[in-house]
Each structure stands twice: as C-alpha cells, then as structure tokens.
Length: 467
Image (cartoon, rainbow, N blue to C red; front, side, top):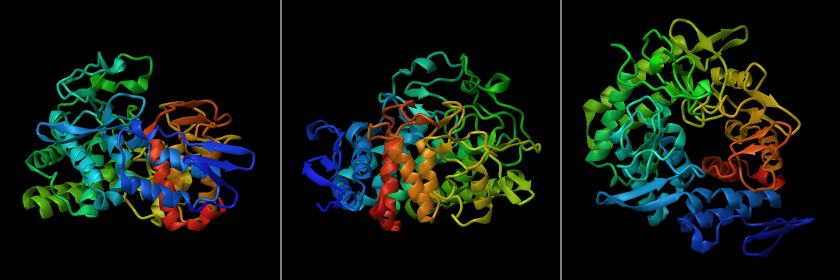
C-alpha cells in the first residue's frame, strides 16, 4: 500500500509519523461483527490517497465502524434479517440504521455478503413499519418490551418490539432512501416483496394521517422528564397548526420535540422520498395507483412548503426550520440530518440553488441560535446536548455541500483537531475543549466521516493529498 512520504507503515494497522504512532482502533479481525471484502478494498485504496497520517488513521477507524461493531445478520421469519444498533444504545433507530450503511451501497453490486446485509435490513425496516410506523426505534426481538430506561413510562401507545415511539418524519424517509439507493446500485429486487409493499402503503397512509386535515390523528406522546424537549404540548398532540398540506412532526431528527409541528427539512426530505418510492412502486411492483398517490402527495407537500416555509429577508428569501401554517416561523438549524444545511446531501435541492445558498449562509452564522464558534472550531449543535456543543456531523455536512477546496480543508482541520485523541467522531464536543464530548461510540457519525473521505477522494483528491 502506497503511503505519503510523511508516514510509514510499520505493521498491519500501525502508522508512524514524525513524533507520533497511530495504532488502529478497529476490533481484532476475529471480533468484527461483519466483514466486507469490497469495503476493505476501498478502505485500503482510499487510505493510500490521504497524505496526513492522522487523517488516514481516523478514516481507517471510522469508515468500517458500523460493520465492525453494530451489525447483526441472521434470519427472521424465514427471511434474511439485519439488525443494526446505533453504537452505545442497544436499539435500532430507523434513521441511524439506514444512514450507517449508506456509504456501503455503492459497493453492494460487487459483494454478495453486502447484498445479504441490505436485503436483511430492508426486510427488517418493512417489519418495523408494519409494527408501528410512528415509532423511531425498535428492539431486536419484535415481541419484546422496550429496554430503554427513559421510554418505560411514556404516555403513548407502546407496542411490542418498539424501543421508543417518537414520531419523526425522517424515520419513514430514510428506509425509502436506502431501498431506492440499493435498487439503483444493484438492480436487485429480491427484498421488495409483499411485506415491503404493504409497509410502503403504510408509509403513505401515515404521511396522509399526519397532514391532519380531519382532526389530530391517532398519534400522541408525553413523557415525564425534567427536559421539556422530551415531551409534547397539548396532551401530546403538539402546538396548534393550520392544516396547509404539510406533514406534522412531533419530534425532530435529534429526537427533540418540535416547537412548530411543520418541520421544513423533514417535509422537503419527504417530497424527495415519495418521488423515489413512486419510481420503485411503478418499476418493481407495477402499482400505478399507489405510485400516483405518492406523487400527488409529494406535489401537495412541495406547494405547501414553498407557500408557508419561506422567510422573506432583505437579501432574499430563505428556508425556515419550523412553521405552524398560521404565519409563525422559527429560524434555526439542528445538526441532525435532515437539516437545512444538509438539503443537497439528501437530494432535496441542488447545491447551487439560490435559496439554499442564502439559507446555508444564515444557518452557519449567529443568525442561528445553535451555531457555536470557539477556539476548537465552529459548527452547529442543537437543544439535544445544549449550548456550546458542536456536532462534528454539521462540520461534515458543510464539507459535503460545498465545492470550495479551502472550505473543505478547513472542515477536515476541525474534524482532525477535535476527536480528542480517540480516532473516532463523537456526537458533540465543547467549542473550546474537544476533550469534553458526548458519545464515545456513535456509529453514524463515524461512518459519515468515512463517507466524506471517500467522496473527497473522488471529488476533491487534491484536498486529501495536501491534508
């Protein structure tokens, strides 16, 4: 393996650089949960293109972290089954599990083991949606009660198999994104059986219910907690809204409660997901009726978002974060994806879209109350971990959504200087002290960092050669 002159390979997983030695933090080969030959090959090829030995070491630790530590592959109900934990929480989030394996989709066509993993996860997602489309997290055993201490006494309709029941739009969007991406990458339709088809009809029904045109709908959620972001207003139905065609969300991708129930990034993500689902239903299931319903709903949401989700400023309009349909608007951004910053990453708009660019400038500034800047770096956080706490995920999203090499290099510098010597990404770090961080094992952030490096190797190789 070719290495930059500044570093030398001493033995497997050990890199030496002037004054430093970086030892791989991956589990020993025999203790890894899942191994993909295609992932290992890409890891080696990409690592060899990174000049900075510390950055190369971080990439080696992070890119395979989901496979190394969180994947459980087997069978359930006679079908392939894949259950993926978030890392340090022993439950599967619909969002996280989809995002954690997303960087490996591009490799699935050439790796049968990966294909089996994806088929199993698509089956598992369909099963979870059929259990409860309003839940955000699930148990390995579909008949078990929640093992999450904080969810034991929630006032909501908890079902067996559900770990947590916070209604978030993206919980149903991410499985569609993953299924569509896998289908496009491989052409494999094996997993899209009658159970999956039923689950997708439930997704459409749930989105329609949460337009709330005929009352509040069946979902409500309350939790006894000293943190107000853990529960919802008005007996768990959320703050008042005027039904305008958008989907209500009671919680954000951060699992924090919405202030105004029309979350704009979530609704824009739903528009993209519904169009992807329509394409799959037509091509794979030959279900024109449901596909047409998906397109009609996507069109309706898109019109509503453009009518009610835009803030008109002196320098031009930009997206709000949440609205209520009455004209009240909240501007902020949260590091969790979907976010305003991440809209092009999710395919909700193009990177050069003028409104997006104006929004991007606003969210990465003091106009956003959850933008933090300190001696260690700058970035976006959110209520989930509080003030001063920057999420590396937001720095990665800034790099994903720019073509400016200097901006990307700055993002890499912040990520490299704030991992606190661990070689892994964290949930959040203090703006002035990276040693103060949350979640030592957060697989989504790790794999997202790996995804960023792989993309840069393709899109901006000079940045890695100069890193």
